[in-house]
Image 1 (cartoon, one colour):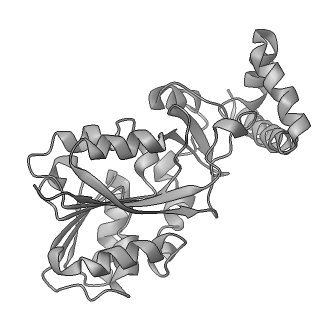
Image 2 (cartoon, rainbow, N blue to C red; image 1 turned 45 degrees about the horizontal axis):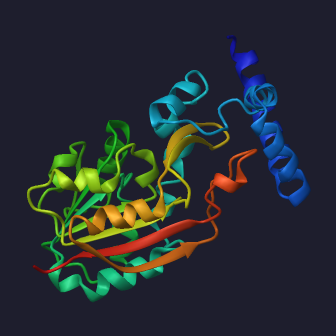
Length: 282
């Protein structure tokens, strides 16, 4: 496919998706779309119209649907460009996170920030919390993001911030942070943590698009880039961590963020969520 044809197809998908979201915003429109979804012929037509903006069984299937359309995905310059400004100020959901970290700060010496981009949470939270000079905050992310993060840390002469691409380095951390990243993992968090020898004492999940229907994958369209993501079931997440000995301390909604899938608002995440867990004492 030529670059012109690719751009035209992306534009068509974006415009059609916007139109169908509007249609589904009304009860009558949603009822019509649901009937169309139930008829194989119309379902095929809807899938063709919205392209990658639909549900998929797995993250790999969603990723396959945007091959040639991803625009660099997580390594897109536009995607990375928003991460440095995010290092400056807290966003919705951060205030609850700050509260829980502050009240447990004396027992937090090592932090593992999964999908932590360029370390934006560290920079933001360090402005409001009295982090010890001995604190070790490790960010786990993709190679290009790590490269940008290291440059930023060096420019600020920040020695408490470290970077890795190895998830196993989270083993033994006091606090596991997954902010705005849980939906980029196929595995459930409980499956990830089950392999750890020494599980984190605390787990902070923030800015996560959780749903109350069975988990599935879809695509986030960032305009110039697209990202495959998975909408995890909220109850499965909580119960999975409970099975590992974690207690849910608090949860909060972040209505400023959402993942609304064209033709499937009934399966979408109308808001993002935050949750704070603590490992129960034996």
